[in-house]
Image (cartoon, rainbow, N blue to C red):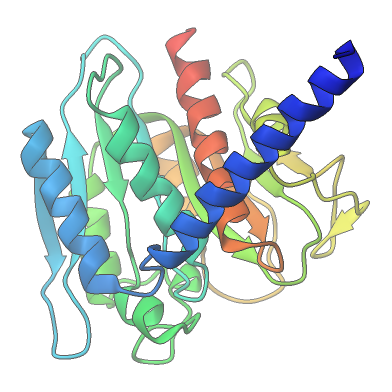
Length: 277
């Protein structure tokens, strides 16, 4: 057998394994089963001796909204992750869950704070908005919304080396990232996108949602202006809590399996970058 034939056979085997993995995933993903997602997070918290804190109690229509927190090494960088603020963007929710289930077992960095499903009603009903018809990602300047009030109270005085908010975009053709950074601090966006593009290409548009983009990256050292009122989650994180605020987006026209894997790869890169500090 020639070397070309051996390479072709190996590629065929890898393709078959990938197809099998995707088929198994698609048969068991629970993408819009909010109760299942919350149950899994509680089980992870119990297994790791971490803390699950209820922020908003369960209703007849949706499970509770909670936060997972794991104490780490106080001399190492702390991180913040979130997903599911838009209920019709499930890949970040599943990618974050799979990442935590496999990567938090032997944690050596600082504290980890994770809001794994900020809009369980939206996820359950495949809706961007919450049960009140509100876009939660334009509510983070609210002083009245019960979730936002509880979110702010929980995060009071907490500081993170990096925050990551996971999203999806039905208009996108590839992955992209908003990075709001401070001069002299670690940067994550470019290499994070390079990691994710092992699964899904990077968005190649020169402009994304009216903003100049460079191979999927929109980076700025101050809060940008928005075309609509309200503050997204990334803004108060950057102002009050994080040295660098990242919002990572996958294109929702790709397969759910690929989108989940892209979110996992992005998270793995962020953590690897922090470990190297």
